Amino acid sequence: MSDNHLRLGVNIDHVATVRNARGGAYPDPLRAAKLAEEAGADGITAHLREDRRHISDADIDGLMEVLSVPLNFEMAATPEMQQIALRHKPHAVCIVPEKREERTTEGGLEVAREENKLAHYIAPLRKAGCRVSIFIAADQRQIEAAHRIGAEVIELHTGAYCDAHAEGRMDEAARELESLREMSAFAHSLGLEVHAGHGLTYDTVQPIAAFPEVRELNIGHFLIGESIFRGLTPAIAEMRRLMDEARA
Image (cartoon, rainbow, N blue to C red; front, side, top):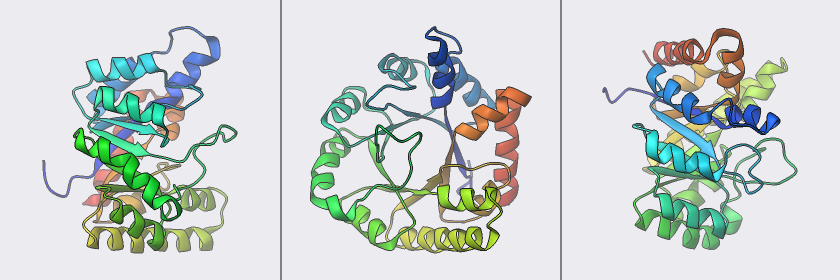
């Protein structure tokens, strides 16, 4: 695979959301993960929330058993989640902010204010062999703090750009995009691997995919929604095509 290859991580959380709406076993997130893998996903992302609103502990157990691509385990910086990650030792652990009242992850992690605490929190994860990623806003102060605490990867929150674009606030979208561009380059200059995600769609993915410093995009909700209309495999294939086109 070429050095220019942009990886696609498919987040399967909302397959579990649909399953949990009826309390049964269908649709199965593990089946979705395997389909995503076959459709060209380079990895699978799953967020085990404190309230287990979508992904369950059993889902994480199953993913670790069946996947042949890496699992990116999203989690809040809590002792419980640290223990689960240390038990499974997934390829990657992405530390995200989490509030019970939010519908989805609303912003980046506040690293600069919690620097000492987070440095101690991620140390055992790194020692266990997990690649630690920090989900943050495109903010120089947060990127510098993520670098200082020993994170190997940052994932830039693209939600503000995507929201502005969706609502037709194109000047604001352009400003957010420029900030993401500048901070991708800045993080790369520090030796951090740069990922991005949150809210990306067919309409918004290509400008981000074109950033040469970005190595991976994590996309979930849109792909699961789009799969209702065109099927999961074609939905992922189209995202893969757009990413490759932008990269070329």
